[in-house]
Length: 194
Picture 1 (cartoon, rainbow, N blue to C red):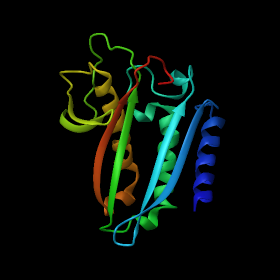
Picture 2: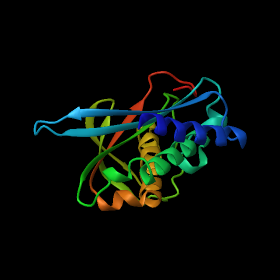
Picture 3: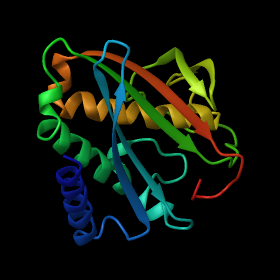
């Protein structure tokens, strides 16, 4: 199972590298884990993640102040892997009525936002969205009128962008009882690698 998943990942990364949209400085990882539950069953945990080396973020990842996942080559490659694995390898786990817990994570570095970054409203106005920020629960809002004034808001929009892609491109999830949550991390350092 994991071998086939690694093949899907390797193929997507190879394809992105061939098209010159992704460099060797981005690492995409997919991890699977069985977690035993109290009723003798097990939950299946899948983690999709990418990291970009210092100095390559502008080419491979989100440009500063940007939040549309489809404009980040690293994010796009990871999302393609999610789409392909959920349509194939993991489709059997997406049976109607089954429960799924999806956690979306977004991050940003500590570079201060001077003034505000315009938010085009592509995900609607976000008001009092429950989110975990560096492990503590809080609520964040981002509206077209308010714009983006904090790195936490920028990170949340990046996570919502991933959610938006998944909702539009992974139809198998429509059959599930989905619980969704957001996790936001803002690094204490400045720099594209964060």
